[in-house]
Length: 102
Image (cartoon, rainbow, N blue to C red):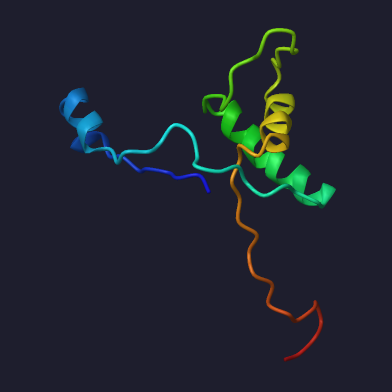
């Protein structure tokens, strides 16, 4: 799960103070995310990660020698999801279908 921090510009006076106030986030997760079995879930997770990359998020892996370098955020996001570097949560379903009265 990716975290978001909201900042007000009035609260920022010193960049060092800001850096000290941010919570510690480990650079790598302790264990990879479970593999995605559904191609539809894979596409949804990769699309959300690509949106983050387009907005300036950093890649979660370095290109290895002999491997292709991905320039498009969509391809980079798909590779991150394939490697298990993107964590996600599937929302709980309500159990009622459209049109059903419960």
